[in-house]
Length: 381
Image 1 (cartoon, rainbow, N blue to C red):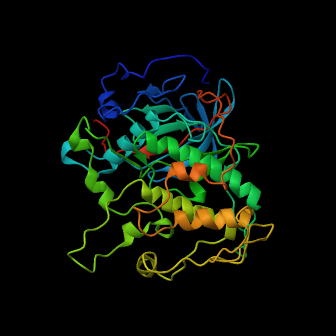
Image 2 (image 1 turned 45 degrees about the vertical axis):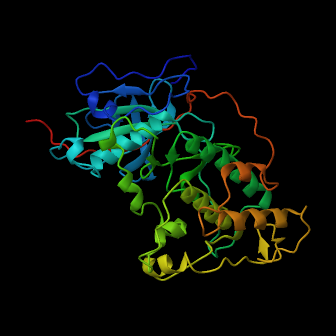
Image 3 (image 1 turned 180 degrees about the horizontal axis):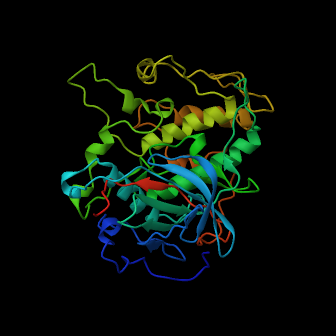
């Protein structure tokens, strides 16, 4: 479906409706061997679950703005995922509608169109017909599915070695996103997907992601106030997202890419120990605990029950247990200005040292169709 070829940064499609996607500011050049396909007509077969060249097979789950389904690209029978969403309502101009579902979808598409990396899920096609009530995003298919990290008794099911390889892939994907100016805002195990042979992990679901540039081309669309709102999964929120500001004279921390580093730390904790570090009966209690509760480290980690020596971490410095807890404590530093950086994570002894990546390429024949997202829009009469 997507064959490698050299191409420039994708240009807006020659269509009267192309402004609806391309009016969102283009970010950096997409280093992709093939541009995202933009289709502005939807064809459906009566009595069949077929949308254009994609046959819908089954439900896979849900993203931030719609359902995710598996489909097959009919000419090649390559598996894909697709999403469905509710009816559109009449649309206000984006300038007057910041924070709307429409703008969030535009932002997600713009961010994914920017990305091309071995550890980030690739957007292949956007199907957006103004006469249809849904918009569809076609993504590469990650057949291994989301990472499974615990059993029914909340015990870890991954070995420490397996966790280290997953951690490496996520660090590389996150490094790329941050270099592109993207804050993912929802790093967690369920947004990390395996390839079919489970040799590669990719970051998915950009429904609440944010990007910022030093000089945004269209300030009205670069809504920085969005970062002051909580987004993502509460168990993975960084302390700076939970801080209540008891002292009105003390400035709140600026929300930065460090929130992804914290979420990466919570993710690593989950993979190693089979549970998040904090648990509460209500979200409010959790918000109170995250900035205040000290980190507690179980004595063993991984399905292979490797010793950690707890928070004091008095193991030999060349042991994997010491490496893991040392990095974990720096990832879960409550002060974001002191939190470990991506560069420091890569240099740590916990992260496997093989960083050689294949040349970035368009998705292969075995791809995945991503969900259709709802846009607030009415069908013209």
